[in-house]
Length: 145
Image 1 (cartoon, one colour):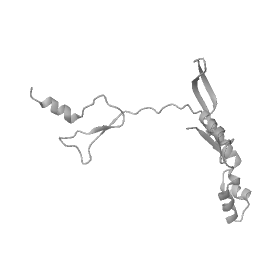
Image 2 (cartoon, rainbow, N blue to C red):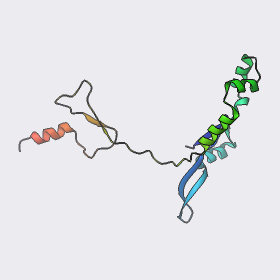
Image 3 (tube, rainbow, N blue to C red):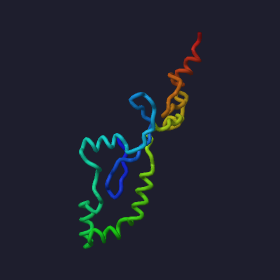
Image 4 (cartoon, one colour):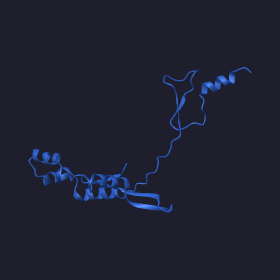
């Protein structure tokens, strides 16, 4: 799925930084527009997604309800041009690296209503080394040989 960044309602591909292999198998660093977002734009035949907020029918309707022009409404209800530009530049400066999220360790969960002698709780999330439950391990220890 592509990564996008928006300025005033117009969505363009975000900057991507990723290691790729060329035709010879040599690793190179690609830094540029998100490749999957660019492919989507190529398939749809568009250069961007969305529309500028001043052309949005909802904004125009809100402005007319308040008996204002769109420019007057934007000056009173929407951030200034400088603030919007600073927000966009901050978002556009982030480079997407497509790394998998870090795996968190499992957490001990008790049964609802507290623990009893039959269940000592189980692990939620993460992966465990053991394939058997604490109950089966306890039974195996108490068996007479």
